[in-house]
Image 1 (cartoon, one colour):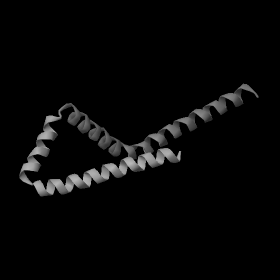
Image 2: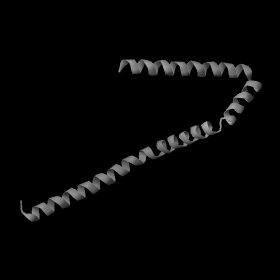
Image 3: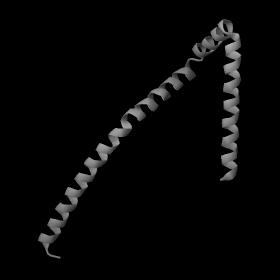
Image 4: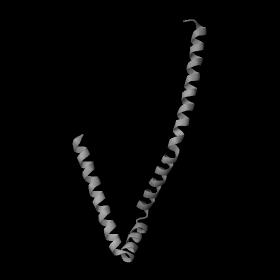
Length: 95
């Protein structure tokens, strides 16, 4: 293959590579907001884990102010947690 053809092919490949990088960056813009929300949720969970007195105080306030509603929602959350654990165990056993 003559040198001119190799240089032309190299230029075509570089151009195509630039187009693909641009296209990928455009498509990745769709993920910006969901990833930012996930980062924010992770920060909140980290903060709650490092400051356990605040969520404990909030739960205590709910128990004092709305005991029946707290028990109902506590039962629902417990049921959801148990269902999640069962589903996770079932999936692990299937694999």
